[in-house]
Length: 157
Image 1: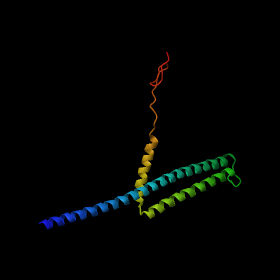
Image 2: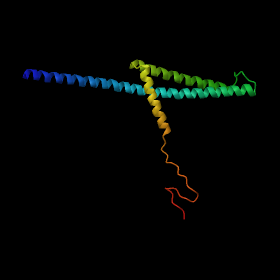
Image 3: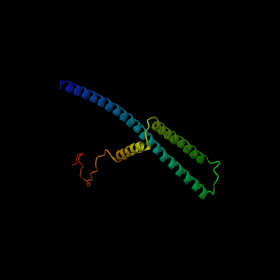
Image 4: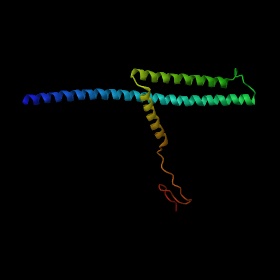
């Protein structure tokens, strides 16, 4: 009976040691994936900001082209510096966006992350960013009648 008890204790120690090692391994993998998902989220948000900037530049270019076509009956922009500056800006932003997309793909490939993992992480990051933008540290405005003092102000007599 004692041998059975000792064998059972030994097996329990072995199992618990194996379980702890496996838990450590899983937690290390989870931490690594979380770090990479955080990096991807940051890059995706930067990419989104660049996309917005790109859209603004396309809109600006469209307004300029429309204005010149309508007002000056000009549809050839070969000598227009403003047009070429916008084209140059657009190209530069597109190169930055392409670099962000490649960086995300590199991280996904390196850490074997799926699009589903990335989408979930990015959604969470964007939601927290939205929440942060909507919060303010301002005190509420208290309206006072003329002659009344608000809470922190001394009242003139």
